[in-house]
Image (cartoon, rainbow, N blue to C red; front, side):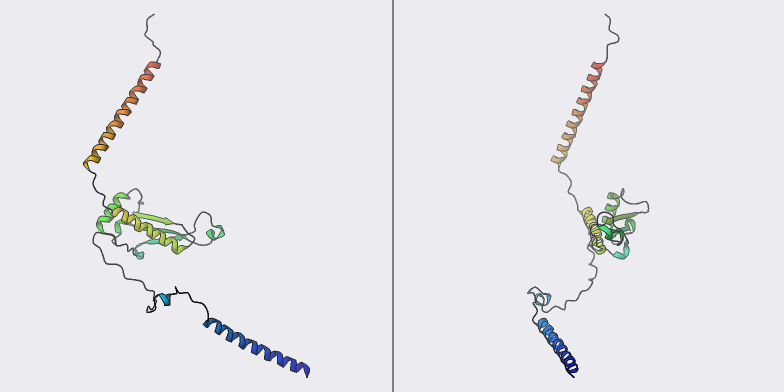
Length: 204
């Protein structure tokens, strides 16, 4: 009889403890700290929905910054360099390539500048390749490769001002001075070699 009473009391204590713990957890969640910088406080009327915006409108002869991923050939491989065993198990290195001559998402003027400026970096098949293994994250490396491509395109879109007449004159004088110094050193070296030769037709 004593054993049955003891077991019954233990069961009642467990039930009471579980109820107490559950109420304490609910109370703790209600009283938990929430930062003043939480999203629902900063944007109280916002629905906080994440969506993919539409491509920006074309800006004529300027690159808008939009790169359609379906026009690119993206492959992933294992990165090299330090990083331990994680390097040999995860394909984080990004290889981004596209045919520059078929890039219809680029303005024609910009495309022509890129084809002239990058002619030594384009493969025989017409592909331009960008690689990135900056981090150990596949998505971050893809973002880095896309940013490299955007920076390259915008760099070729910068219109350089033609040099002034004063600048051209300074360059001409500098080149002329350099040519004179080169010829002077050449004559001086030739004279030294001539003086070193032993006289063969001297009569004693």
